[in-house]
Structure formats: C-alpha cells, structure tokens
Length: 191
Image 1: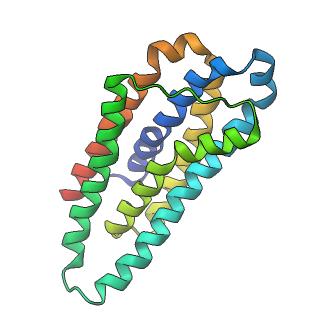
Image 2: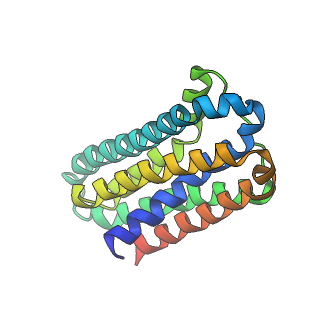
C-alpha cells in the first residue's frame, strides 16, 4: 500500500476515538468554554495521540531488535503479532461503536483534557507497537506521525465545534469506521 495513503488512513482511523469523545463531551462545556478552549483541547489530544504512537513504535522497535537477535525468523512472527494487535484495537473500536458505549468526558479543566487525551490514545500506542512489529522503518513512521497529529487535531476541532446533536447521531459511527480501517490495515500486514 502507498505510504501516504496508509498514513492518511491510519491517521483518520486513530482519530475516530478523539472525534467521538469530542462530539459527546462538547455537551459538558458551555459554548463560551468551547470557543476559549477548543484549540488547547485539539493540541493536547494531537500531541498525546502522536506521542503515544511514537512511544509504542520506539518500544516495539527496541523489543524487535532485541528479540530478533535470538530468533531467526522473527519477522514472520512480528507480522502475526502486528495483525493481532490491530485486530484487537480495531475490533474494540468497532464493538464500542456498535454498542454505542458512552464516551462522555468532562473537558472543562486541563487535567481532564490530558486524561481524555490519554484515554483516547492508548490504541495509538498499540498501533505504534504493531508497526514496529511489522518492521516499519522511520521513513514510513514520520508521515504516519504527521497524519495522526493533523487528523487528531482536526477531528477534535470539528467534534467540539459541532456540538452534542451531531455527537449523538454520528459519534459512534466514526468509531465503527475507524475500527474497520484498523482491521483492514492489520489484514494488509499479513499480505
């Protein structure tokens, strides 16, 4: 798959959680608070999402190098592990979207914003880890990191500004689509 297309799809799929949380959480803050804090919330979510993706990739790269010294055919095993991790994260997102699991977070304080950013970005760390297991080089990782940052920031901006009405109607659909894209990227690792 083309590196740029893969980066865009991954960035869009990982921001689905942030989009759903921003949509649903916009109910907990006033319009004035949204106007004052929307850029801060978007920036914090984007930095955390990208940072955890990079941390997962860095941790996975170190583990892959260490294990590959002892196991001759680690690359085949790494592809399976990467697929299983993406299948798990994508499946969880899909199931949460289908079940319409509640994602309301109070984003009125900075601590809550950071906690919300971390809560929605755990999957990014797992995806970074799976990319390392797929032996993805830095040349593939940096465009993905940029894509994750940009799409996360945009999704939070759109989600917070769109308000609670759209959150009730589309928030979970975004998780379903994001989950399916992650599962598709996992299948692509095996091919």
